[in-house]
Every structure is written in C-alpha cells, then in structure tokens.
Image 1: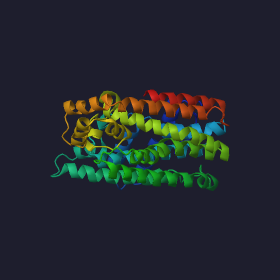
Image 2: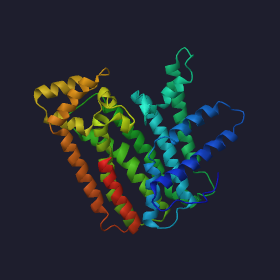
Image 3: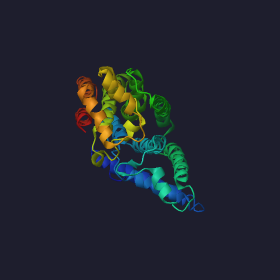
Length: 356
C-alpha cells in the first residue's frame, strides 16, 4: 500500500474522496499482484474499480474523517483512512447486492454490476443469470475485502478494539434493514412504522451515525461527544432517506443516475407512500393500491401516481419532515463539544442533504 504523503485539507470532501479512492485502487492492485495465477480476478477488480471511480459521493468516508476531526482537530491518522476505505468498499458490496435484489438496470447513470457482467458474456446461453450470479460473487468479494483492509500495521490492536463493535453493528443493522425493506416491498400500507424502521437501520445508522462515530472513536471521543454526534446524525440520516425516497419518485434520472420508475414498479413501502395512502380519497387509494408494484408501470401511469402524491399533500408533508429533521440535526450542534471547523462542516452538510 502506498503511503499517504499528502493528506487532504481538513474536511475537503473532494480531497477525502481522492485519498480514499487512491487507497482502494492501490489495494485492488495488491490483490491482483498477490494472485498471479488467477487472471479471472481482473474481471472482478476491474468492475470494482469502475464502481469506485465513477460517480460515488463517498459520504461515509467523508463522515468518518469528519468524526475524527470533530474530536481531535488533527491530521487524520492512517487508521482513519483504512476505516474510511473499508466503509466505502462495504458500501460497494451493498450496492451490488441491492441492485440484484431490486432488478435494477442502472446505478449512477451506468449499467449495474450484474448488467455489466452479463454484457461481458453475451455469447453465453444464459448471460443474464450468469451476470447475476457473478455479481453476487463480486459483492461477496467486496464484503470480505472490506474487512481485509483493516488488517494492516497502521491499525493497532487498540484501534481495532475501538472500531470492531461499530463495524459489526453496521453490518448487522444494514442486513436487517435490507430484510425489512424486502419484506415490506409490494405491500403498501398506511402504517408508516415499518418504513421508519427501514430508514433507521438501512440508512440513518449505516450512512450517517456509524461512520461519524467510528472516526470519533478512533480519535478518543468521550461518551458526551459520541452522544452529541448521534443527536446530530440520527435525524440527518432520516432526512437523507426521506429525500432519497422523493428523488426515487420525482427525481430526474439524468441527475440522480437511477430510474424514477424502479421504486414505484417494486411497490416500495416508504413514508411517502404511507402518507399518501393515509390522506387519500377512496378513489385515490384504489389507484395507489392498483398501480404501486406494477412491474410494467409506464411513465404516463407513474405520472398518475405522482399527481396523487402531490394532491394528497404527501410530497409536501415529506418535505416538511426533511426540513424538521435537518433543523433538529443543526440545533444538536449548537452546544456540542466538538471542534469548531468540524461543527461548521457538519452544519453545512445537513443543509446540502435537504437540498440535494
């Protein structure tokens, strides 16, 4: 692994992304060099490089570094970079398997892993199934390597002891959140509680809470500082997913990089859907229940659903929920025992989540 000779300026997301991306590419190169008798491995490392270098926001590594700086205010240690890189590779694993489960065709404006891998074997008698199966293997490899990244002299036994519980909780909670998502999909209901549980475990804890706390723990955070970061991270994580749910229905695919039909075709149980069902007239409710989950939903029919989300006030209600949670997150920083520069960054990050 190459040395990190030029650490980025504190809390510069672009530089943090570049540093973590370079670390991951170096790691993939090492895996190839360590297996000279396995030329097939290049297929997997190449696909991972494509995913890691095109379009990702690297929000989890950024938050991991932010957690460190919020507590220490010092240049990030090599341990922080390894944990940050591990988070991004774990995230890549989740995207690969999530796209398989959701039968998604695009991710970040490009073919999903299983579609890209199928395209490499167009002469195979069942290239689609081969692509799915190869993507499952690719995800398994990314998951394993995300933990392999932590086996490095830069991470002392003390460091590993600090982060292992958080990483294990992240892995477990993400799996449970995905399971809850799978069981609720195709069963739209007025009860929003299942959707909130999915948000808590699949997004809030995974995307915001754990990355921030992992970086903070490595910096020696106190119980009070961890509490302050959680008070900020939980509502922000909820706002993040609520915005994602709106973008999944109303977003421009050219901007989001994913279809605005997939969630509707699958009948995802979201707070938006539950709110619309709860506020709808009998006719509107019948239309929602009839069309949500239709795998052949057209753009025109999707517009009918969007009109109902707007007419019932559900879309506006979710926008208010986002604003309320962003406000709660920002207020949690007011008296937090954190470094000033990091506090400003986290405050601005919350605003960007609301407006993306």
